[in-house]
Image (cartoon, rainbow, N blue to C red; front, side):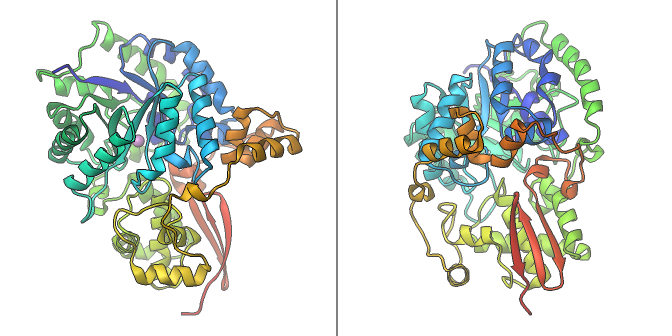
Length: 494
Ligand code: CO
């Protein structure tokens, strides 16, 4: 069996997890060419929150970053994280927008698409897997790891099989919360290899101190590649660092084979990253660098915990932290045991807080209703029928069972018209970005200065800062902001 390989996440998840996605393209310029010579199987350079954050906070056009990094690192495959039908936004987009986004990304240099869905509904990955293949790129079907009574080996192996049948070139185990124990990693790798016959890559976080151990077990069980980063944008809530991984894997048959100067280059990059890390200190948190076992206790992503503490403050229920944490599995169960990943972590988190604040299901957020009614796709287990009926009654919407995007009309022409009406350059690139981030793109062209850097947005120095939830209450009226959309909610008498 071939040795395993390393992917490098420092230009995306490394700083998304440890510095609120605030590394600028300029700060990457000197590092990218060195990374390109180190023999990584992939460089993660785009996707996830980096597109939203770069446009919103750094005033960068997303495609400019990709162009620049591709030019600086032309020899290593570039990789990005894509939320299936949600692309890099927070809702479902039309198939023609998804196809255009992927085609353009490939045109600008993207090679590997890591495609996942927040419910693990393969139907929501179908269009992006097909589009990536058609554009000549590699499509990696990505499985969100989570724990629940329905998420067992058989479930994951089945899901892998379905994704493989859609034409995926590989399978990625995505453990966004860093919860997967080494033994389970090994079992899952074996099960997926058996059910799909495809390469299996692993992406985890070292939040609870399990990440590096999970990689060792996964590689010994046959995993083909693992995601690592480079200190100081590594470890803690980020990926384990390459240096540590090589030391841990030393002596094993499938230890990655690296060039003689690999470690020297790692050391050099680490030194170059120190001042960059320092310049982003407003967004880095000491807490990120230590092992946080609380995530094991609560089984939720680390970023969600810090986000929560602030949300509870806004709702005036700081003293109810334990109660809210206990409510999370209740909400997950009622919603068919959905995983906790953007945007479902925010949806479940805010609903759990509301259940504690106002009484269970007294206030139901619009997103919770949409999940319950099928507008996000198929949940891993059935939604509680009583809750579903209640959501249908309150929202006046019907339950749907089709792929949500089947209900969305083609969008590209409409986007072109909108750009023209706003006097913005009408390019396909702008269309797909406008579909997701209209206000930010307008601000970009208006030359509006990005908002001053702060880590006070919901107090989370993590990716959640761009997609948080906040609520302001006055009397019986509440202004709710979920992922940038405002809702007026009238609080019912209990
Ligand atoms: Co990640």
